[in-house]
Length: 137
Image (cartoon, rainbow, N blue to C red; front, side):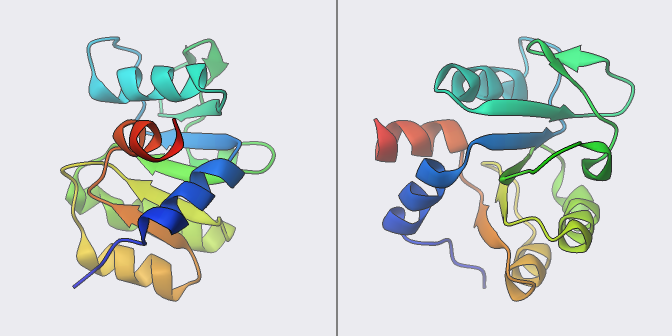
């Protein structure tokens, strides 16, 4: 069974991350992905929307896939259904990305363990906004 990193490890991650690719970032301000990403953007993080068929969100250019994102990605924040996490994890492993955050309410133990086995820092079933407020403010 997957176990999240300690508070200290999560705090350290949030301090070293600068650029967050948000998979499934909705352009709809009423969606949780939008509100959480807007909060993280106000906290000083660069947000990179990853969502097909969207031009931009929160004033940032959107990309169809993680592979399409130019430059470094420090963290992938995932707002997708549990059954869609495998595809994101496979792409993150292929791209050798350092960290994945699977949002609150989304659980895919096998994918999280596969990412961790590939050397990726993984947080699952937690909200990055809540954890940032709790650990970093």
